[in-house]
Amino acid sequence: MLASTTLASEDRHPFIMTAPSVLGIFTSLSEVYVFLPQCLAPTYLGDFHLKGVELRKEGLNRIGNMLVPNSNYCAFEDWIMPIFEAMLAEQQEQGTRWTPSSVCLWSRRACSF
Image 1 (cartoon, rainbow, N blue to C red):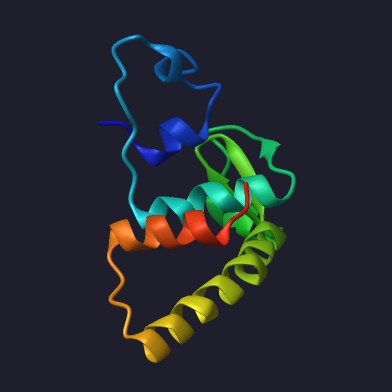
Image 2: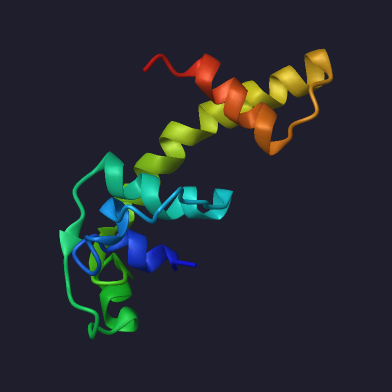
């Protein structure tokens, strides 16, 4: 089992993702809140020994050795809220009961990758 900070800090154990013995990586929805803000705006390399309390005063969050500005989380919320609103509308109008599988299928439909 790998902690989210282990995966979030790719320079910590870069071999993990390419090891032939890795069959898959499982995560919870709470991990989405950790990883997506890193993708929406710049994230910076920090140090494992930086004090979270001091960083927080400067508007930074530490995930392992990575520093994520508060603005990344604001960008994430701006991105995710319309998705949640569309899901709520579908639930109210069509009676959709959301499960992890239905969320994955819905997101595949909604995102045009």
